[in-house]
Image 1 (cartoon, one colour):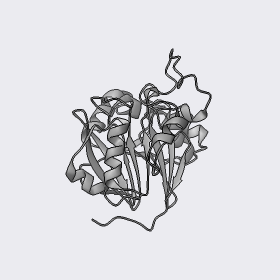
Image 2: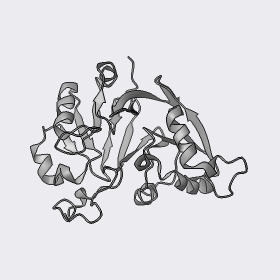
Image 3: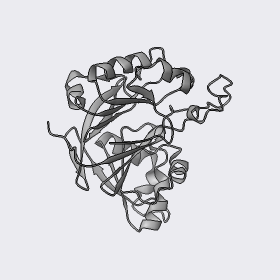
Length: 261
């Protein structure tokens, strides 16, 4: 399989937390009370900047504050991994880009995800358009590679318990969130990636997410140059302490982390 290797990719971790974020409301555990900014996690999302294009993978309920924090002034597309609300709830806030850039925003998702978005945001798709509804251009995709502005995205099919979720390989970068199972066939698509991001909810086993140990085992087999764990709950532990226990090539991601390859 041929992969793009000549296009520089800047990856910004917009959020690295689980669906409840960290700190969790009402929680007084050491992680939620930590003053280390690395332990404060918005809902999981990344931004890719490639060849002058800006792509966001998932826009959850913290999308607005993530865009403001990173001073984002352009958005070319939002690509969705799946339809859970912590990954789609911020879609309404693309309106600001509609107004300023005077264009529709392209969104990409599987037919199942697009159908769920139509249900969650009915006013966007009403026959008589609501005046301030986001203006979107819808692009369904399936298991085959697809291109956005000349950039190839290779879908990686994984399972979030029984729910299909899509990870993506772009050049030598692979991003997978909300997974508890990856088949051998899909792992073949990931092999050779220089950087891999993989979800890791907590230390103990979970029905719909990899644990830290399971993620480390997979990444050790894949042997990337570097790997980052994301979609982290407060049960993972303190950022600084956990990093000391991980293999040298694996680190916990954190909000605002920038990686370039």
